[in-house]
Length: 342
Image (cartoon, rainbow, N blue to C red):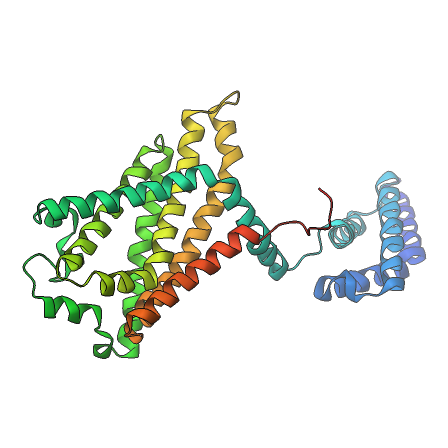
């Protein structure tokens, strides 16, 4: 049999093939390693030019190695090297920080502006719940117990003294730093659960999201009416505003995200429901991410600042000031420069 002479011929041919080109492969490998660690921009013009040229040479060598049946170890090496070089040359060169920055400065505000119809409905559902809860409490205070869970009221209920209700609005002195941290974590967990339920239930024809948002408004309206009936409406408004502007907006935004999914199921238009869900899904998830970010901020404010800041005026300034920053972000972020086209 003549397999041994043929094997020796193939080995000699592979060795010669590798010896003629190995220097350029090593150079390419070094450039790829540098680019993977520091980015293509760190290579400089000449190194970047060499990278592109050496990558083309390596691809030609890989094609030739496959055509003349070189040994498998050489082919695997070239395939791995060319794959790494391809990602360096053609893949988007953007860091995680860049992706996150673009998401926050462009994607989020643009999505909020596109989603203004369901956002408007979400805020209206919350506002309507507040109004109904307030009016029903004024007519019959027993409605308070129907709307507000006992664990949430913490003794703040019809029949409580004015002095006790006032003390609950200005109780920062009774909490140390560790206690406020635990409290903030609890609030974030509780509010996040509400937002997730509001978002997730939206896929069921959108109505459950609005109902849950409306119910949260009922709780808020009855709670505020309790303090207003005791002559503490202004103080309670400041107490709620410091975190509520952000928190209520977050729940309404989560409602809008869920509603987008539900409306895609109810009215897919000329698309299939699956295609409609795929189309609105990214925007809906973006709204939910925004709601989660806002809830983190709200929990920090509610767990720390509301306990530390003991004047109503400062609470109002902080709450509505932060709300103004959110609004400024979503209205102005991600817009093309005024002098640009398109």
